[in-house]
Structures are given as structure tokens and as C-alpha cells.
Length: 167
Image (cartoon, helix red, strand yellow):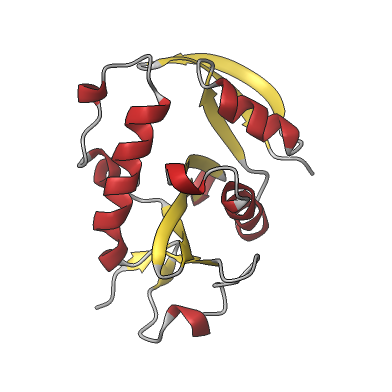
């Protein structure tokens, strides 16, 4: 039995031949995550969270968080030169973008926008997300791409805004 991701069975053929894989910019490949990707994804998740959420103690974040935080979600990876440089995880049942993380050395290169576009176009329903209010860079990123604030709340890591994707 093959594992399931994104509500679909992981194919036995290479990602380049998978219909849902696409190359939106040059040699960037966006495809569904495979089990073999998870160690690299966990490392990326840990590194970016520790640097981005500087107002929280770095020790709060652990490598194992990735496996817990993405359980039951559709995980898309962005690959460039055979290296995973970003990912997005989506809870499909509610069209909720739970995570969008880009390697620090690839930030500002359009990878986040490509992943975000991919999520919007492959997720049924209107995509929403939560963004911590202390994460001003992420708020600016979503606002610049037409996302609207539709609510707010409080989480264990601080207050957040709820955004909705543009139509």
C-alpha cells in the first residue's frame, strides 16, 4: 500500500510525469510531497520558524513539530536544482493554508508566490489562512497578493489575523 498525500495516492512514477506537478518558473518544480521529502521539510520548517518567530524562544520549536503540524494535510513542495526550497501545507477539508515556508536563501525570489498560486488553483473552495500579527513581513506578503483580512483571534503564539484569498 502506498502512502496518501493531498487526498491522492502517491504515484510510483517520477514527479515530472505526475499531472499535478508543474513548473511555474524556469526550473522550479511544485509537486506533492513524498515520504522521502519529510526529513528535509522538517529541517526547513524548524530553521525558518526559529528565524521568523524571533519574539518567541527558539527552544519552543523542534524538528518533530513538522510531522505533527502537517498530519492530515496536503503538502506541496517547491524544488529547485533537486533541492527542496519551500513548501505549503493545506488542510483540504476547510481549504485552510496552514503553512507556507520558504528557505531563507530563497525568500524574495517568487517561490512563495508560486506556491501560493498553486495552492489557490489546486484547493477546492476559497482558501483562508491565519497569520500571527507579529509577523509583519508575512502580512505584507499576503496583502500585496490581494488577500483580505476577514477576522482575528488569539493563539498559543500570540494574536493572529485571518486572511482570505482573492477571488
